[in-house]
Image (cartoon, helix red, strand yellow):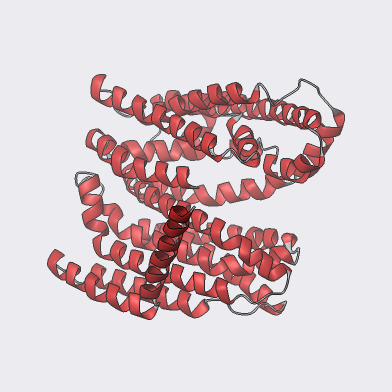
Length: 469
């Protein structure tokens, strides 16, 4: 996950200052709503590559792997082309019905996004194959190259050609073009043109059932954008989408941590082992989240003000609320993995299916009544509701509580600081003093000092081993 985190940080702390210098919230709002309209194409055209490859890759020989990959990519192209063409044909009807204050120019921007979507057809499947083959370094290079292509396109368009809104749509186009070249370059040695009924049936049987749930997830994740631009404005949606860029970084960090904690969790649950070490790791993680959450609650305004030249400071109050997502994911992680080991996959799917439609209605009400903050609160609440639902069932099946007190403590602390900063005008000097004092308390509460000492000892031990060898 390191490349993804790196790209997220580069995008936020390097590209955001450049792009926001030239563009305004309305430009970002327009991009957010048009890209949201194209998002359902992804799950609708999905072949469920992760499910299909994961269940077959290690059971077949190299020749069959090449044949399977060819059939996956063939269906990828057929399905993606179908949906892109359908959206292209119906764009003149869809856009005016969805986008408030529709302008005919939006059709052009939308079609640029559709071209990007089509160019990116092969990358998700090729990307998963590369990961499956344990070629992490290559995957990192290709991902960063795609990001760099978008960054270069943005700089050239904004600085040299003085373009404005169109640049936001050229960024994914440039990245998608490089992804197509990368995919074709890599996959040429890993496919064999051979249409097999066996593999087509396997894809439809294993991969296609993921379409309804994936589509519902996408729809649930974009309804807030629709309601915001419909009832507020594109400029307000631009503010909202900017705040989501920080949420994306939080999500990437959570995924990186999950790669460390999930394997021991699965092993412990599968073999009915003690989860003491997992609890200790989660406690340390919650402590680190407490430090990060306090920092974000105190300094989100200053961070956004500096990065966006003061244009997007209205996004600052939303960022600490987005941070609660990482706490919610951490809270639910042990129970979700417990249910996975118990083969309760159907329940995991149904817990999402039941909660999401309910919260689409809540999102509509929240945005209408409370504006941007309502949209964030609804999203965070729906995520927490799903994990609480899963925890309840896991406990019923015999799972013990795992770091629940730490979750409640850190959540209360972050919310407390958020409310304090929201309702009390605190100077930068006082914020700094408060952060130093509260950080000391968090370090003591979660015993982070011993964690740092342990890391130093392990590093010294590694150093001595290298010297000895």
